[in-house]
Image (cartoon, rainbow, N blue to C red; front, side, top):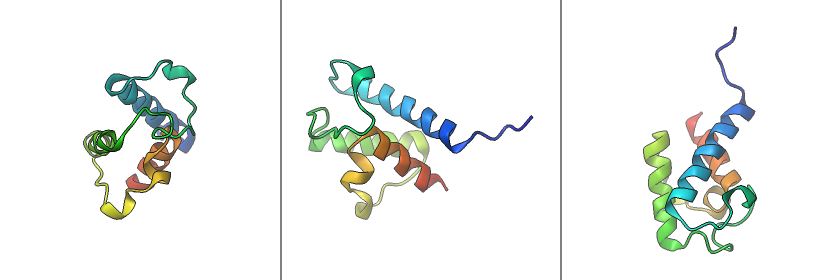
Length: 91
């Protein structure tokens, strides 16, 4: 039996961890209804200070460093964007 997890399973694991973090640290009326691609900033879930919390979560949870040049909306502004960023950084 192969113990390797697929990229899709890895994404799902990251997505669940990210959702859980957001639900624990930010006000979200209905976490399950939050689209994977919804802008966390536009939805009013995360503000500029919250972005720093998200970065701290990524660095502590996944053991990766978020460089200044990587502080881009496509990396940090949606659950899907964060998950994909984590996968890219862990390679």
